[in-house]
Amino acid sequence: MKPLILVVEDDEQVRLLVAQLLTHAGYRVWAAADRDEALRLVEREPPRLILLDWNIPWGMDAPAFARALRERRLDKHCPILLACSDPTAEKMRTVGAIGAMGKPFHLNEMLERVAEAIAPR
Image 1 (cartoon, one colour):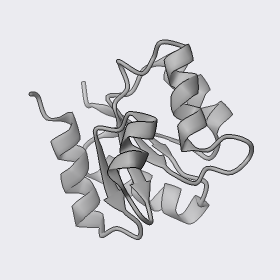
Image 2 (cartoon, rainbow, N blue to C red):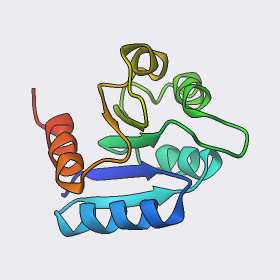
Image 3 (cartoon, rainbow, N blue to C red):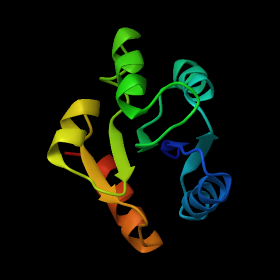
């Protein structure tokens, strides 16, 4: 079965473009515009990777989303790749991310980072 990637991004154009690109690259993709939708999807089937935007509006930013994953004990099953304008080690630690990439990002870079993040270790 193809790996499932969850894209959590509030910008509809970015969310749809990333989802389309990942689907074209052979992944199964779920896309969520907000934390509630994302948490419902994760509880339904934990994805192989969560591509998480740092600035999620509507009441829950990336650190709060990561805490919600931990409270539901889903964080061990759902590694996070953080996307933000200024990725730092501190931000990565805050959400427990396995990696980060700057925004805006090049689509090829995003595909490479996703492939690296889900590669067997």
